[in-house]
Image (cartoon, rainbow, N blue to C red; front, side, top):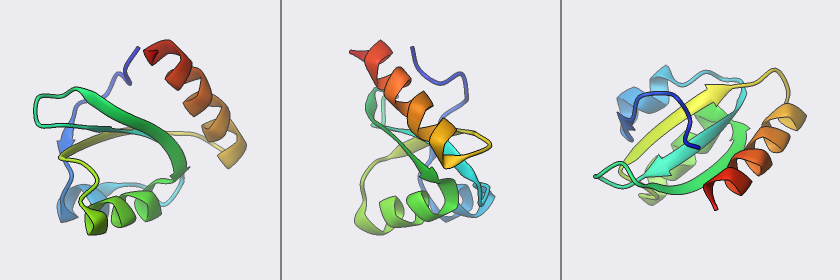
Length: 81
């Protein structure tokens, strides 16, 4: 089950609008197919992804802690398989 958030192009605007908080994020291709699910401090993770050209699109949801983000990402990956 994908995150219930709209896709954003993975660019500087998306990175600057990402919160400096823990969360889960999905990377997608140009057609919106989920390519990867991961977690971490959102702005930091997206900066790295943008620098390495990891994806075309991104969407995310915040969590209160990194532990919550890790658990949610694992659960989310299981549902995608």
